[in-house]
Length: 214
Image (cartoon, rainbow, N blue to C red; front, side, top):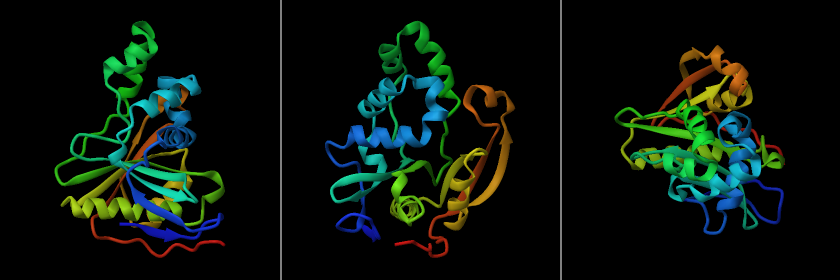
């Protein structure tokens, strides 16, 4: 399955499933660009973080946006016990050392989310800066929704932090509703945000059509 949205290159942006072979480093760069501030305390420095992410991606847990053969966006999801970003505890310890790695594992544990039965958990959206606001994120969300429907899920869940209001606005336009907000003041100094909102969308629901600029 694929969908086209307007692009700025010679062709449309094509949404497809899976990370294209050979694009793992690019996928990791996009993901880090979107979530590096949050993941920094666990995976910094950036060059090492991108390399670690690229080496431990589950390519079949993503939908991607491609323009002129270049990866320009992706959305990850967790299903069947596997998410877009992988890497075992031993992988973290091997990459960062046992002493510093233990602290990093504790930080990473703060981001662990486990889907309820019949639930698909989204693992964030990253879109190249020049294409933001042009419908790419919406197309990625709808492709994830299609995956959820095909897998027999009843609900899509995601978590959004209080310092990312633009992402929350996008999710609300695509049919997500906030169900609870958990204050996390103890994380503000460490990770830069002070609350996490959980949002749900029933599988089969659609948000309103997105207005796209040329």
